[in-house]
Each structure stands twice: as structure tokens, then as C-alpha cells.
Length: 323
Ligand SMILES: NC(=O)c1ccc[n+]([C@@H]2O[C@H](COP(=O)([O-])OP(=O)(O)OC[C@H]3O[C@@H](n4cnc5c(N)ncnc54)[C@H](O)[C@@H]3O)[C@@H](O)[C@H]2O)c1
Image 1 (tube, protein in one colour):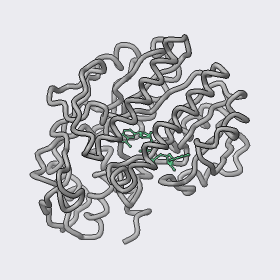
Image 2 (cartoon, protein in one colour; image 1 turned 45 degrees about the horizontal axis):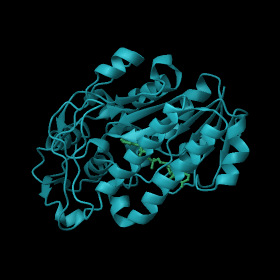
Image 3 (cartoon, protein in one colour; image 1 turned 90 degrees about the horizontal axis):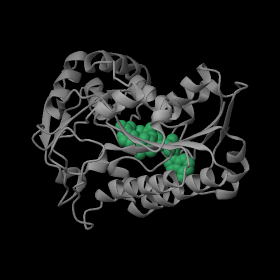
């Protein structure tokens, strides 16, 4: 198959590309390297089945040159990470809404199967867990910039459902806190990357708030497996799936586990959210996916437990993070 991966030089995208190349597909990546890195795909440069274009998904004429010859599109390019969104909400909204409008519009025009990367942020601060795909969304005020990411992904999903209603074979995956090798050292979107960097340097591991907020950390192999299934299974067409582990971990528990596995002497420090995100920041207390639908329709079950995944991630970070 010929497959386009937007955002394919990013953390998840590059692992997806590796899996596609491994199964014998020809892959084109379009990525503007805004948060992605060429190092993530450097090992593939020169591979006859790998093609890379350093450009934006907002460049519609460029995308229109390539999408007609594709069999499948994975749309992962996006402005990612709460800090990025807060730093430049306008650029983030533009990439996540306008960019997706371009990619999905062309997939519709040339009738291409597409998988859209969405997020557990969709559920906002809903307090009823586990989150089922058809649950209500609970969001804060538009005066709180962090919700623009959730909103932009929700608009993307609405676009996707609207095209699906017209018959386009399109599926949506909502990722829950993916982690693994190639996490960005700057940690802009990942508490795992931040904690590992701090632990390896012996800096304080900075837990925001009381640390009792929970997340379900999902190892990259599982994230990619769920994504591939969403692009293959007949039952995936026109549907949205939670792709995540159901094992709930508190942020304090994560800090302590990383400290132990990295054999770090870092103290764990509690910092107020305001120190990082300014006044009025709102966080989600618990975020747990319901795994039923992905299991039933895709046959997807996450396999890697947190300790095993963290061990592999820490090994990679030791080699690649600056010390
Ligand atoms: N990592 C997670 O846990 C997680 C959770 C929920 C959703 N997601 C979604 O998964 C996708 C991949 O995220 P990731 O964690 O790999 O982050 P990432 O930042 O590593 O990947 C995003 C990629 O998109 C590229 N990009 C951004 N704007 C672009 C543009 N205008 N044109 C072309 N490329 C552009 C970036 O350079 C980067 O390579 C995103 O859509 C994100 O919203 C990720």
C-alpha cells in the first residue's frame, strides 16, 4: 500500500512509519518539523520505500499533488501539548482546524481511507470514568486557552463524522497519554519525558498540584497497534475508538516509579499549577478510557504494562537525552 502519514516525523508518527515500512508499505511523510524531529526518521532516509517532505499540511497544493496516489492516510500532524497551545493558541487552532480541514477535504475529494488522530483531551474535565466514546464532553470556559486543544480536536472529529456520513471510509483514534522511545526531551506534551529527564539529571521531579490526578499511560507499541487496526478493520469505518491502557496511575505514583526505575536520587517536589500555566489553569483529575469498543470492534488490547514500558523508555532516554 501507499500510505501518507502527516506528522510522521513526530513521536507517534515515526513509530507508525516504522511499522508501516516493516510490513512492506511505501510511506510518504509530510511534516514541518515544528515539534517533530528529523532524528526520528533519519534511519529511514534513503530507504526506497520512504519519502519525506518537510512542509506544512496547510500547503494544500502540495498535498493535492500526493493524496491522489495514496491508498491510506494517517493524519497525525497537529499542534500538540498544553504548553504549546498556551504559548500560541492561534497557531495551534489554525494547524488543528484548518490543517485537518485541508487533509480531510482532499481525502474526500480523492476518496481515500483515513485515520484521524484525536485525543483523550476530548473528554475535558468529565468526572465520570471510564470514558466511553459516546460520553458527554465537559469543558471549561473559552477564556481558558487550554480547552482550545480539546475544541480543535472535537471540530476535527465533527469533520470526520460529517465525511463518514457521506460514505467516506474514515476512523478516529483517541490516544491516551502515549509514552516510549523518541519522546521529546523538552517534554512539552509529556509528563513521562519531563520526569525521566529530571530523574536522569538528578533535578527535582516536579509534580504539579497534589499529584493525585491520574492518567492511563500507554506504551508506544500499543498506541501504534491500535492505530494500524483502525486503518485496517472493516468494523472501524465511521467509528471513533479510545486507544489507551486502562491501568490508572497517579502522577505522584508515576514520579516515584520513574525515580525508582532510573535509580535516581532526585527529590519529588510539589509545584502549584500556576507556576507553569498561569492563573486559572484547569486540569482533569482522572482520565481512564473504556476499552470495550476497541476490544470488540478492533480486537485491540494494550499489552505492555507500565513498568516494562518505562524501563525501555528510560534506557532510550539515557542514550538520547542531554545530561
Ligand atoms: N502523545 C500522546 O499521548 C497523544 C495524546 C493524544 C493525542 N495525540 C495526537 O497524536 C498525534 C501525534 O502526536 P505526538 O504525540 O506524536 O506529537 P508530535 O508533536 O511528536 O507529533 C506531531 C507532528 O506534527 C508535526 N506538525 C505540526 N504542525 C504541522 C504542520 N502544520 N504541518 C506538518 N506537520 C506538522 C510536528 O512537527 C510533529 O512531527 C497528534 O495529532 C496529537 O494531537 C497524541
